[in-house]
Length: 400
Image 1 (cartoon, rainbow, N blue to C red):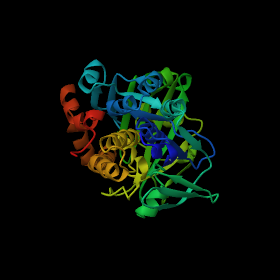
Image 2: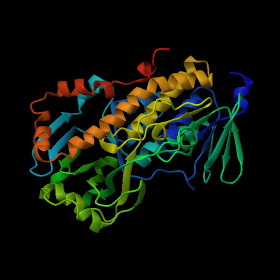
Image 3: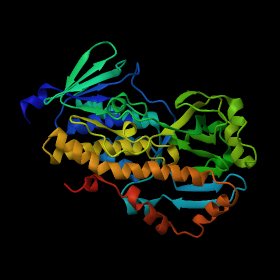
Image 4: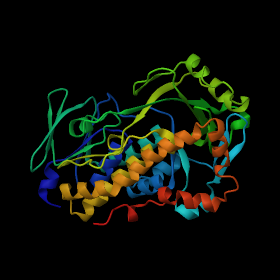
């Protein structure tokens, strides 16, 4: 390692799951890292998230697989029911045969626990400086590095900049300048204690109830002591991308016609967080000299594939590998990283849109949806998931 690498850090904008994963990947390549986080404290908002085998492969590559595994809940299956008549549309076992096929489990975890697992790795490294209340305002670069100016007027100098600053990325705004695509779909999320959760829904499964212009999701968290509840509906209002407190009255007004078994989910939470969702059109260029984008800053997606955070962690691992094979040459590595990620992440964005349509089908489309997976074996489901769950550190790079 040359001395110059030790002198300047690599800058990472954003201290969420993607930013921390990027920081860990960089440290593993011998860099020091400075993370710039605009929030006043380190943490994650949200509730549960799903982790496919691809996410565990990525956690393993970053050295925090055991931490993540110890906090996850391992589901026995993924299941989809029609929310109107309770018909079981599809059921995918995620037990031993699934693990054998993909080399890692399927699990659910609280976002704070996934973030915390990465944060432990960051803190243990001793090579990562984490600044809170630091918002990126403007970026300059030259042949030897990048200068980031924050809202306090401070200039941060680094070898390169990873823009992991989320769906409303300032880094993306400066270099790409595109508009978000607001979906009009609103997501309400909450966590409910086991004691308050209906016994007839206490399944060890990632469960979804799909209905006309809406769906409901539930699964266990934190050793089954809590349950994640997520409901989505098409808003009557003109929506703007963002998060705020939810209102019990609003969410109650959207689920007419849903079967009582599924409907009880929306009566449970005492408080909700409300997300108005958006994505962006996939783009082919994320890297600009010594600056590149990662996670939601690069490829924000709707939630229907349950892969947003997983893709960010994959990005980080791929970025680290691209640096390794290019001997830490940033411009070459950023080009390889981008080529390795653009099609895969765009497929997630586009598949998620299509999955949202399938979930929310009505009329004859609903009948088609309910017929799609009739009689399909577990093995055939696994074959269909190979493109997604078969990702690992050994196959993450494009031809180079």
